Amino acid sequence: MKNGKKKLWLILILAFLIIIGVIVFIFCNRDEEVAIIEEYTPQEEISDEQQRQTIVSIYYNNKQTNTLMPEARLIDVKALNDNPYTVLINLAINEPKNDKLESAIPEGTNLISVEVKKEVAYVNLSEEFINNNKGGAEAEAKSVYAIVNTLTELNEVNSVRILIAGEENREFNDGAINFKNNFVRIENDNEA
Image (cartoon, rainbow, N blue to C red; front, side, top):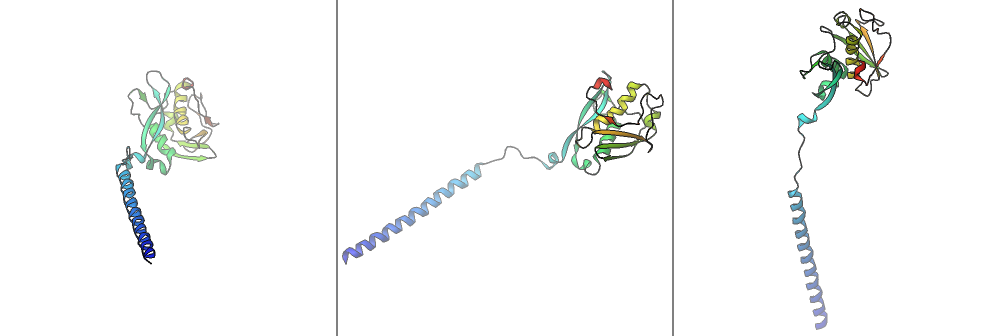
């Protein structure tokens, strides 16, 4: 019986040592995981302000080269939620931020409406678009393509139809450019 008691004590001591070992192992590893988590710091967090902004390209006339060129604008995404086309055209109508650029759209022009149907943007402008234009095919083309190139930066717009005071098939006063057909983007700025 003494051997039976010895074996029982030996088994109890071994079980006790195993339990103590497991407890020590768990506590040691738990501290290492906490240390790893505490040491991690993110590179840079993005602020709410940065998350709400996007870059858009608005086309203006370069005063020095007399060609159309884009000006990048950082704008609030919320401004584009309702009707991004209106926002973009109004930016093109207004003066650019860069002093070397100027709006190619005739002074006094107002946007009446803009609507996109089947990848065509229907842009309805006031009479000032044709009446206040400097004249000549080059200036008129810049006015048209400032709008066309700005809107076709958007994936859903492939061409632009220009209406004047709600009327289709109008033209500039000198007849150099008419609005009977849709205008598509030009890549070579020297064409405008």
